[in-house]
Length: 438
Ligand SMILES: Cc1ncc(COP(=O)(O)O)c(C=O)c1O
Figure 1: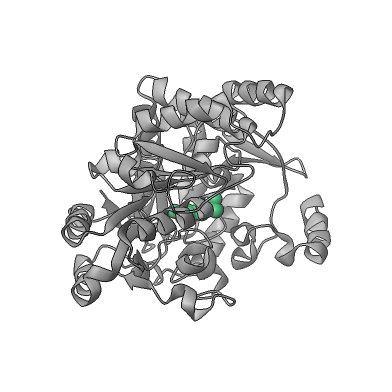
Figure 2 (figure 1 turned 90 degrees about the vertical axis):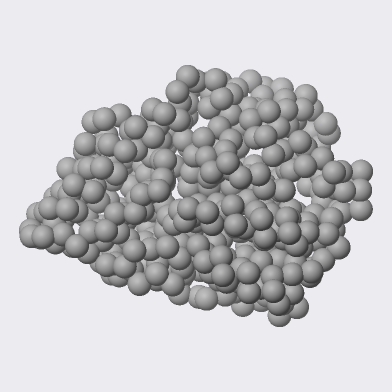
């Protein structure tokens, strides 16, 4: 028995499913979770001393790789001064200014502790601002686990095979309307039916919780117009895309100004952080200034702020940071494309910037229904092959691969060699690969 196996055997006695978040479970890929002891740069090491090239990166925030020296130094310095005060600190002002400076749609921002909290608060604010109740979300988009958002919510619930959650009273989700990602007609139908009751449309501007599903050309623009015409707010949930697709997130990448934006883990550089922000006239409704109540004892925690400020400053000030990251990612995705072209497996490669996903299906994946055509057993086999080769992927067909700036050409080539072993070691012939790249 490995040490990970024995720790897991112990964990299941004390922690539901042995993990503190369902996406960490390895059940759907027929494996035991690896218990991670440390991370450095592009690699993590488990308690059995096995080293893996990490394409999860704590589900996005480790865009610089693990334990970047400047982030680590900032955290150490902050710790020396005290772990938490529950009082205002200068770091919170620095962080707020940094976010407002980097993201043009944000004039004011409130820090919270997770993406779930950020979305829950932004939705409450949108309802308070518009004095309407209904929210439109998209099937396959995940916005955290608050009650109203747990409707057709993507990867975690998909992988567990549970469509929605028990324990959510109907009353909590009755105002959550669901549309089809990349299908503007499905949103128009909702606006035609009850446009004047819709407080907000919320979406991941690039779907990253049903695998990676970029928006079709014109989709985000059409949503922007529909919201403006109907007096509804457009909320971009940039928990994954923020500061990953570029310094100004997906909204900068696609040139769309949402009314509110939510951020998560990436702005904490690995510490538990989230934030929501937007136009001043909307944000001024948040307590203590306005009537929309939202609070948090540990919000803006000084250690978390120190990590986040260090990380965002590096992202902002490193010349051509995103260009280099994208070129490294292209090396990976182009390589995967070539391998698949040589193999006879029907797969779809969706990717954008440093996010990518390989779907084991012969259908082009543009929404949740199409994502669900993927063969999860085939994914599980591929996952196990890659893990054995030292490549740590998310243990679910419906999650993204995150490329980090700590990865080198050698790392990418090693990944491609492992994939070549899987796809070409067993299968030779003509490919039916479709490659969707926006
Ligand atoms: C797009 C999106 N929104 C919200 C969340 C919830 O964030 P957290 O897990 O920090 O609560 C996630 C989590 O991955 C996410 O991907």
